[in-house]
Image: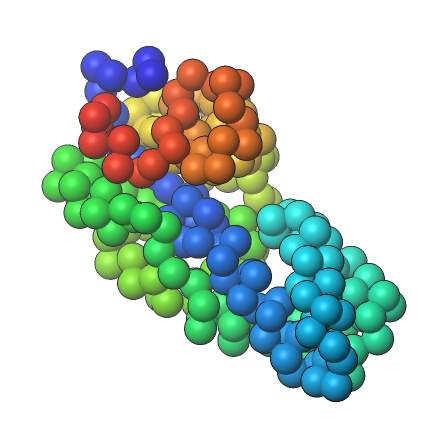
Length: 220
């Protein structure tokens, strides 16, 4: 880790799978869809549906029309793609939970740095998730990509969050779980970055990596 000793004024977080456990929420959402729209199917087919939903979703990076259009073609549930997708915001509110140590690290950092949040996604859904995990109160500024006309990893959105937070890019540290969006993107804008890699997806790829948010206390 080479961020020790750097003088940051702001720490900026990603939301999904960084502060909010989207992976769990989407699995529970898929199970709920199976209960609602495959009522008379076997448990095995419902389990196949859930597994396929998770694969198609690509951890939130697949277009939603593609995910729900494909799942409806393959499983013929008792509902349209739009009907299934419409349940996501409702289920996100119901099932989104904090990542381990998310609130603990925000409490630790809030009196030391300016805290902001930058996330890709729709304004309504991401707002629902943020309210569901109860973390909105810790951030001076929240930017959701749908509001801006751009999204990660476009360098302009990182420059925007720095301006909104009132710091220069070199004074900001970005923390997230995705190599392109949360490491390469911020670095391209002149920020520093820490990769939160709970599952070891990028093991050995990037020096500034933590497997637990609690590890940040050692460096910040």
